[in-house]
Length: 213
Figure 1 (cartoon, rainbow, N blue to C red):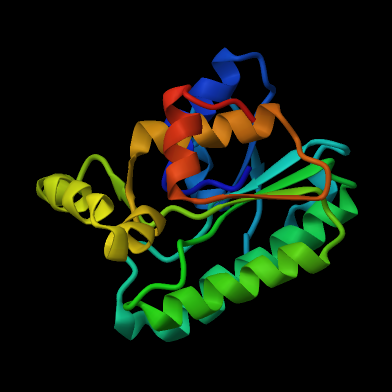
Figure 2 (cartoon, helix red, strand yellow):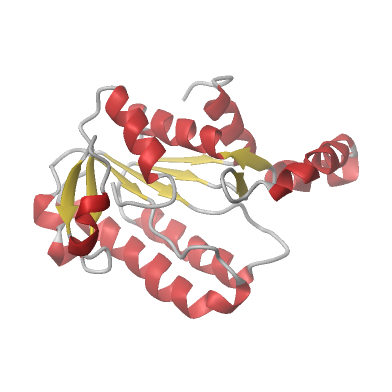
């Protein structure tokens, strides 16, 4: 697992469920790795620095990305999001990972075109890797620091009730951080054969326990 947005809660949940968790972290950040997992010092933009330490045959969860995505961060999306994904896939293949988990983004969407373009490229790399993989496509995740969209929930419900806007509202639906963590953990526990894609509605269902993988 590479450390990212949901690192602490996800690490805690996987550890509580009996998984042995490893986390890739920069040397200066090793001390910040949750005590429930084993740190692997390395640079996520250079697989050579960590690939030999990844246990063979495991599940590789990629959570690296630019914090607080914005339209003016296109160059960062290319160097960090795409760059780290390419290195993660190379490392996972080197370790003969049985399953690769990647958090992408719901699309198509009317905004964040540069971000969606990079995430789509990442998805294609995962598809072409030959790895069994799960791709999760949330749109907006509600949680600490991201609570204001809760006011949009009634608006979403209205759009979902109107036939002409239902598909778009469902495709770009909101998920909570808890649902996202639960869906990630469920994906780790249930490796697919070839490729599995979870859209926002499925993330909510899996994350709430309403659907099993």
